[in-house]
Image (cartoon, rainbow, N blue to C red; front, side, top):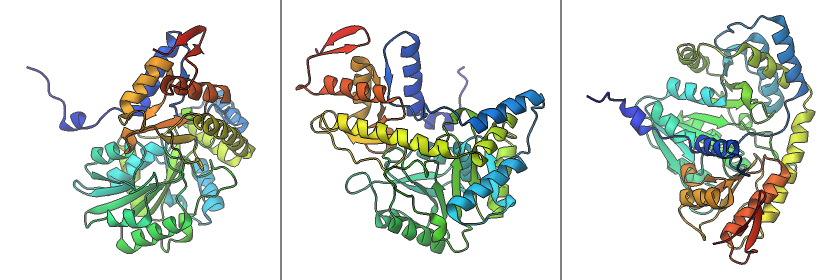
Length: 402
């Protein structure tokens, strides 16, 4: 007799981004000249303040359990960071530190969503939103734009029903890199508060912006703000993906307390070394943030210049993050097949748009080094554009288009 797994195990799919990362690592390990433009991990070095904090903690030889919801030092740093960027003074009881922003979001869903509750979010969306909502027993409701890759406030509000428990907004958006405009944020914040719906602002990229852009501040439009949950972390902003530290801030102390219970019964607490390093990154010099944005903006411009050489490609200039979301539907409306083709033929890893809610698109990351970004898109052009040169050098081999 075969042992049966849970229905949930059969319902939840693999993470397409992690799947691409695994394929890319395997090809690299096999010695293939792969270019990875599918990742969400900045190559920028760790801030010196974080490195020194790690060294100091290691030298102390006292690496122990931390308080379940985060150390006082890191909570204080998060409160200072939040006040500096959102202009609202929260209290210690309004903060929970988690093992990455992803866990903070999952804690929220477990604490707020009952079976059958709906959670609304715009498409394209981060690939984990639907699966995480399902894992919490909720019903994901993706709002697809009538045109392009940006939904309107009206389209978002129209998706809300009596069953809606929460709205999730990610700005700048993974995968499109677009910033939701001021009027959109104002309308959604005011609407959610009036309708007594949780509004989760997934702000993990909110400082990674280009061309002098600024992300609208949701706190500017919130009254009591007890329904407003701001989620952030150190992974993207400081390139500290390996620390696995994120947080949630909300004036609703009952919610934060409930999220803390979910965390205490699952992961118990966060890593001692990681929390010390994250606090140091937040309170140390912030020059690294501007430096990273400058590097990423230059990479973005190089990427867009290369994409412009491929006929029939449509893409909005990313305003933030380190992703572009290009429409390749002229070549293949099946983005998963197209991504696999580019991996097989050109040894370039990109992420298909289908798991983000818009097929026919590819998410192309520009957080790799600039030479890799340029070479990767040139390979994509060679594989798709019949007017491109028939031969290309991939690694040490001269390859002809078949």
